[in-house]
Length: 115
Image (cartoon, rainbow, N blue to C red; front, side, top):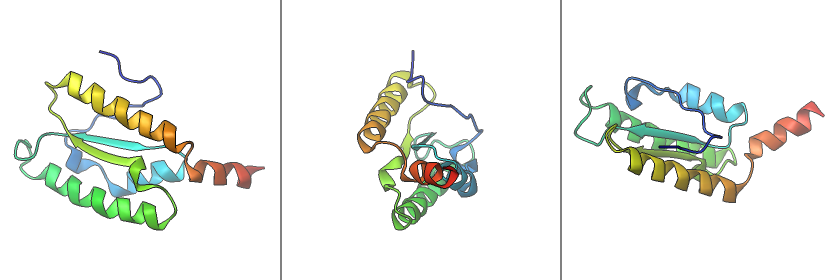
């Protein structure tokens, strides 16, 4: 199955290992959005990783909103590795949202600063 070619996948052992620092750094570098896919709640091999991710994404969304970046640019969804069609659907829908939002406001700020 194919997901959008403009998406870069970074595999981690658990969604709970996705650092808020790395998410914010990605936005700082001008990415248009960050999608975090994790196991269904209650099915985490590391017991509570996806619950930690859910809390982090809520806080990060508020931070992004405060900084003038649409919180819709950050998304976490719970799909198992055996649910490829659902994963592809989630990613495609996210990419459609990002296309509607347009380029990240941080990307345009970077362009202004480098000009």
